[in-house]
View 1 (cartoon, rainbow, N blue to C red):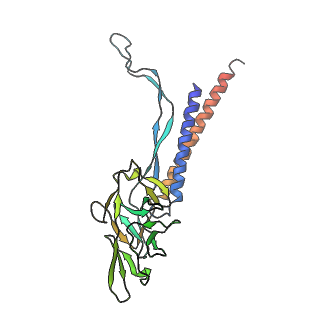
View 2 (cartoon, rainbow, N blue to C red; view 1 turned 30 degrees about the horizontal axis):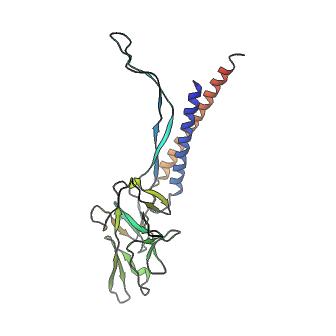
View 3 (spheres, rainbow, N blue to C red; view 1 turned 60 degrees about the vertical axis):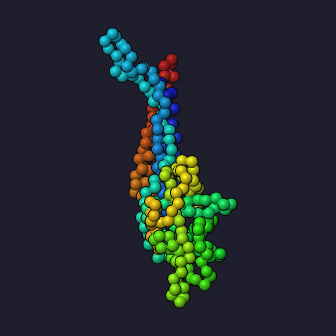
Length: 266
């Protein structure tokens, strides 16, 4: 009946509306350092089994096909696509991008821990390295940079060492930065402010120094760009809009069929 078509098309419009929301967020974060684009995964819903396939029709034959009517679609999940972003050279010594697997470890207020791919660090009033977002989360294992050392004279090495060059030319190792990686990074919780939180799906963090134990290495003076590909997202947006319109047309067609049925008595 057309009633089934109405409900089925409605599930399609609802699921596609979610996809449009995700695409819009991807495009909005096209300039966010370390941002990883997401995609929407779909799954079909239950089916009405009106005729069972394989039913015996005679002593020698069985029906090869059945009659199964689908009831629509639903969003199964949104998946974070952790592929490597392009490098942008900044020339700022406290900037660093991770080439390969791993996350910078960030301390949250109250003792929690978060993870980020954004490497735009700055020095706060206490001489510590903090993430350059609106909250200024402290980098775990951040050394304290002496007041007499200029920010321009501090840099991160490829293996995670924080190195300072003093006025007399001597080089001092201030500390070591460690990274963390996960068995299933797509299972992390997107907290906003460029950070992720651990979840039961992501697994426990595996810590290590950059370049060791499967960790990526650091590229100092660079930032990892967003993985949003504007052309791809716009194409997906157009495709989604067209499918949304087709579902809308299905509702209109089903409505017209119901109007015909309603007018049969006249």
